[in-house]
Amino acid sequence: MEPGETPYQAAVREMLEETGITVGNLITFYEEPHNVFMYGHSPIHENVTLQGDEYIIDIRWASLHDDSLFDSKSTSILKQFHLYDRNTIKD
Image (cartoon, rainbow, N blue to C red; front, top):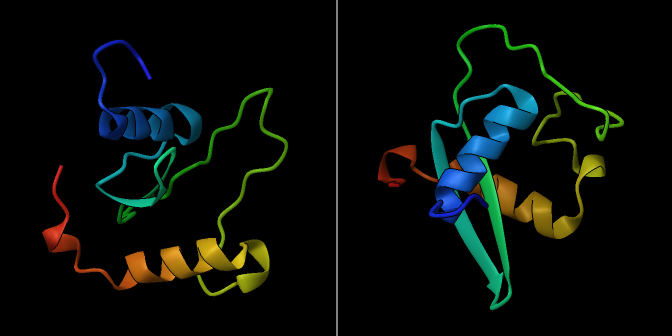
């Protein structure tokens, strides 16, 4: 996080910097006191070219329905987020 930046702002900035994707909505799930799991979602209405850098080995689009790509905890959270009413998500 940058000085004075909230976790929300950091997540949005990092998503843009690392992938080139602008996060439209963000929901936060707290798993335990010292860990915060944040998953973003933004409807994509245009073609987006994923960006990488020297630290990224592989980058690709994945379906929420491909359970082989995520552990069970991540799959559960992602599916809950997918079902969540996006209109209720606030900054």
